[in-house]
Image (cartoon, rainbow, N blue to C red):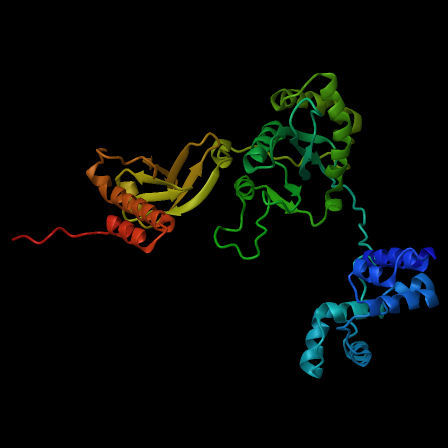
Length: 440
């Protein structure tokens, strides 16, 4: 009886209540039909089935059947062909071949389910999990450094959630650098890497995940040289960046996250530290204690770190650098701002050529051509040239070009906001370029 009840739908349960009242004589079949919303004849049939089969008689006879089910013969034919000719094909490719070679039309997901039920195809859960073979540590200190960021409530309820950037030496398991920051940005990694380099020197390689800070993940990037800003900086320092394919591949830093999320959180609590600045001042002390407890000796005594060279100017390397083309009017566009180059001989030589726009963390921008900084000033689109503004004659062409662009943008916005054709015509007439009337 219980199994029969669980198989009924909500509507069938409502009918059961009415049928039980009819069977007890508390309700007529006509009144019951009106309550349920069916005809008297249908109610009589339901009552008859209930008397013969019980609760099971109220269930739909078509439950579990599909009106669009494909013929059994089609399924047998398709699976036979797959077993005979396409046993190692995936469902998508097998479906394509069944259509092209045998004119058998079946949806890919339908064929996938048929192949799973027949044991030809295995789901992801059914496949054997990938075996992560352990690897030996690197031989030398500084040969490979694993880096990653851990987003965690480091200050618990005393401060905001933040990210801890962690650098772990693969050979010794020692913490090489720690930095608390708001997010895993390029400048955050610049800060952490700079403190690492100034303290230890340059490692041979950094081992990271496939985050966008370290790797250009677009298959066909529209622009750029294939390097991220962090990758470009490491290339300038002759440090390789290697990306792991799985988190387990850089397990040393992943396990360090677990230890830090336990020990560091408690140490910050005991010291009453609740800000990132205070935490960054304490982290060197924590690293020394951590390395003393958990660090180990490398198999080879050689230190693979290389000293910084005189040409390794970290102030210039750890900047945001992008290439832009100089227009004939000696203007450069970068991040929605137009920069006007002073018409020096160097700037004129850079016309219609590509220059490097260097942006510092504090917002300063430097434009360089062949290593030479060009004198430039920003030309803000909004409010830079106002009524009565004084514009140097040499910069007039660029100013007028920008003004015209702004006027066209304003016109388009007003046309879109106009409700009627008459209003749109008035707006267009207002902004239309008109020649002065001809003279007498």
